[in-house]
Amino acid sequence: MSRTIKVLLAEDQSMVREALAALLGLEDDIEVVAQVARGDEVLAAARAHDVDVALLDIEMPGMTGIEAAAQVHRELPAVKLVVLTTFGRPGYLRSAMESGADAFLVKDAPAAQLAEAVRKVLAGERVIDPTLAAAALAEGANPLTDREREVLRAAEDGSTNAELAKAMHLSQGTVRNYLSTAIQKLAVRNRAEAARIAREKGWL
Image 1 (cartoon, rainbow, N blue to C red):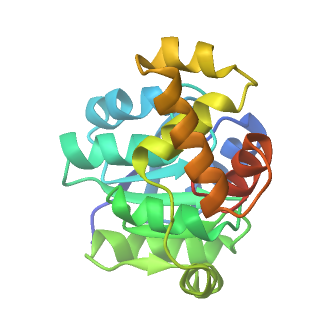
Image 2: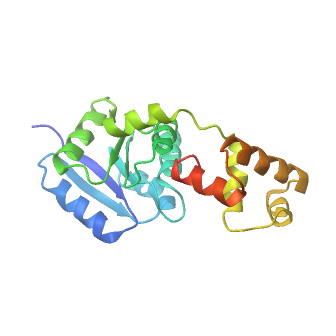
């Protein structure tokens, strides 16, 4: 008899989390041994419960699922990582794979497909939703540098250049340069549009 696969579920919406746990619980060889609602709780839970596979939502408080995946990949490389998203944004796929994720699926994938993905990643395979993969290839690479993304993210709340400069320990001129370069690259008129477009494409 094959051993039971121990799974961690990280999802901030309790109804979705419980539904996923119930669906996976129907599988004879899968057991959900831990559930968390915050990205910054993933690593501790994965370590405490000695999990085989972590299923991670992207948008969570404390830390995104992609950031949590990178953290787990670095600290617990044996744990397999499945990133789940309701956001069919191609940039997220690239970010997820770069963070060490083994699978990238949309949340509304059939339960059987999700369970099969858990088994496949444990066997060393990669599983990527084909429609997301096609969109990512069509979209191309993220044109923004890490620093440009960081400044754009910080600017999303409407902070002034002076406020951003102080918070990020940069000069106002440097902040202005990063923002104007990002605006040019994304072919938009202002920082708000740049942040919106980059967020929609999964580039932030």
